[in-house]
Length: 168
Ligand SMILES: [Zn+2]
Image 1 (cartoon, rainbow, N blue to C red):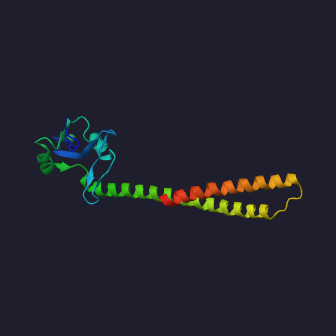
Image 2 (cartoon, rainbow, N blue to C red):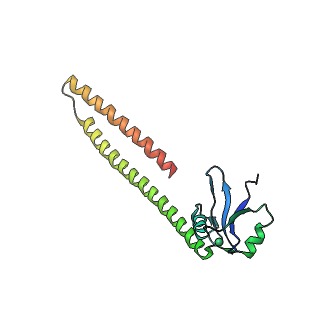
Image 3 (cartoon, rainbow, N blue to C red):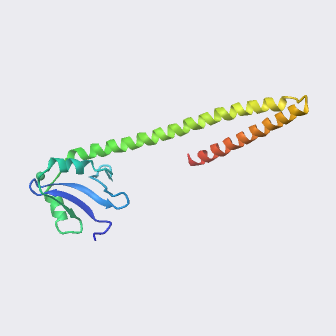
């Protein structure tokens, strides 16, 4: 069995070209994908693999590993498939991931803002309850119930805000 550090190339000898598959990731059941030296990262998807297979359909293609003796010969003498497109593609992938991270952060911040608005509202309502004087015993119990409910609500919100504040 090849080691976890083995990198692979998919090769078409007829066209003296290859696409880099990177290492195989067993947990995710996929290859790392083509590699951009400029960004020092892999595509993390199978875009170039799929394009390679389509471009060389009905040609014999083979996979070779960096633990074999042909790997570096192919790497140095064959043409890398769609080589000019790799940096731009990886750049787009990085951009998409950044946009997704930004979107998640914005959502989290919007959620925090809503919590602060609710917290402020509860504090005001609570203050009203505390200022109200009970005229009957029944009123007193109602007010105590409200007082307890507002206190619990604020406590819950402070816990949530405190927790996500630590994460962010
Ligand atoms: Zn071919």
